Image (cartoon, rainbow, N blue to C red; front, side):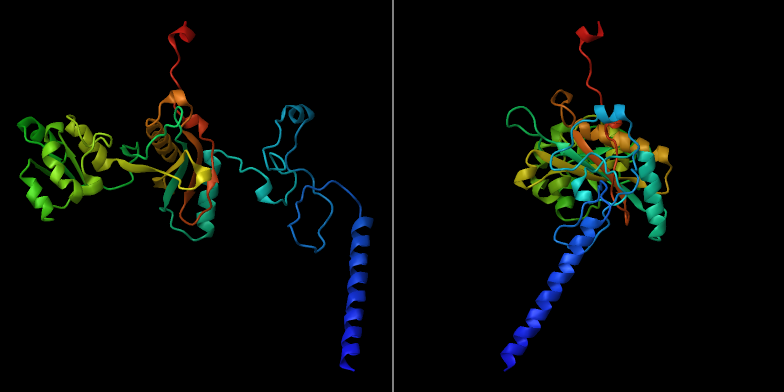
Length: 324
């Protein structure tokens, strides 16, 4: 006798569900119909409002005709409502001044210190002609407004003029091949090491010990201009470019580097960003198009903000025929 009771309860439950569903559908269809840009979350059947608020962006008819087609897999370039699903709209960049303002406000709401680090993330187009690509690189740039303490530099030099120049420009350790044994025994403390070209063959025994600190010409740690190298690596800001391992990100790379503190002025942060982007762009010829395709900025504890990178990209030199 228990089975009919359970069947009866199931029947009553089914009837109530059908009646509630029909009332919900009738209520939604009898509501006033107006165009709505709100994208409902997929799989959710709870009732949402079927009307839209006034448009956020006031677009004229002329601008509407000149507006390009919508981006692929997106609904439109800009949302027309105050509530929308961000995955269906592109991430549009804003000005740097607005980025600084929003970062400072977000840091204040999160009770962050005013001197937190500010970091930029650059997306790179590593493709060259045919199947060639730009290899991952490491470099250093002297920012207009220094943000780090001077590093300890070791200089390999044997000539008297080079030794004197290294000591004048503030090198921490200066010497010749006699320093090899002390380095192998971990008796010397330094952050970077530079050398003159004629000593590189004799320093190969330190390659395994120094690893990334080993002098290389591509990193501007091998050369005859010792004052420039010492100043660059003692007060410069180091950056490195890495590539993605995902197949869909083939031919793309990224650079994440600190460019200042949040308590610096907008002009100081902008000058550091301009210097860093131009230094990164030197690793790819301008004839292959822009190297940096996207730029974002954030501080510790704040969201990331996408900003316009075009004003900071170096311009390709014009040909003589165009100048004439």
